Image 1 (cartoon, one colour):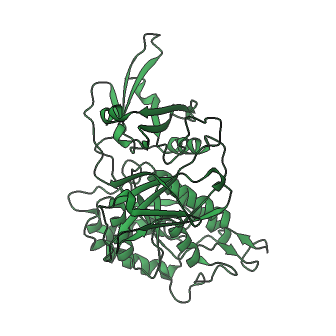
Image 2 (cartoon, rainbow, N blue to C red):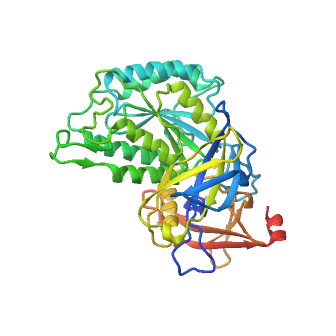
Image 3 (cartoon, rainbow, N blue to C red):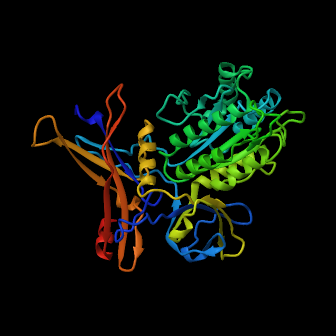
Length: 455
């Protein structure tokens, strides 16, 4: 149909965005804190049979009541059989999870790059499975270059074949490094490198946000500082990158991305452990990234160990949500602690969050704008849409949208199930900025029978 390319329907998951109290629409949003939790046994293997009442959550030392709980594995999403003029955000091209390796040339020295490249070839070549594993370079001028990239974009440069792409990792990586490697430009100082690094991570988070469930980035880097002393700053002043770190961790958290840093520092590197000057250095910054996103801190891991951990953690996890009291949104950092009552189970989750006050609807706006900025279909909520001519005129179309109820977060409250979605219709015309309509509330309330029928 001629009109099919002009419309994309975007549905946002309220649990991650902005659940609202239907009985108090004029009040500040009742915002849920969403946790993506990994449970591990004493051997580091995932535990997949935990129940809601086996988890405990404390927010700034105070116990919280779990409002939403589900176990998430990562099978392929259901691909619907489509009728004529029917479209879906799910197809066989969708991927159920993603582990992305970021080889950070920008923040590594020449000596470290060579060592990292050698280890990467060795460890990827012996990887048990390369399914849903992707590799990008962060170039010295801040670009993201795909060696084996996410499907659907320019990154998909490796023709593949029957063998896994990792079996050809050495020629693939050598070719990519020849294309991008150059001396670090003199004008790119440390402060600029930090900002460019965070911008690249933001871009990756936006692309990964379209993949359902938990995603991970194995970040191979010497790290970036959180603070520069006057002797390292081009202005002669102290520079604090904490605000950038906060914004970046929140963007990664919204996209469901966890960081697994691997620092391969060579002795004599000018960016060694305390190379940031006075204050907190690169190692602490990387560990804070991991803790704020629910990844695993860099404790001297090699690439193989970090990659195996990241891949395992994306396969299965628990989604847990709770509502902090309204007074908790105080523009301060809140420490989180998630534990399990079952003996021998270790819980891996983010260790805190920034409780920023926000205007009602701000989270929904952020999520919609993020979805608009990517060229890929987000498939976490299954959607089918049928386009047909409108009886009102030949220049209009009718859109009938069908949502997969099993993908929606429904909060069980007494004898009711409540869900809150926000929908936007966006018009896309080549060469023109997307035109977005207003957010449309789509609040759902089911009784037990209606809930079972919907599922």
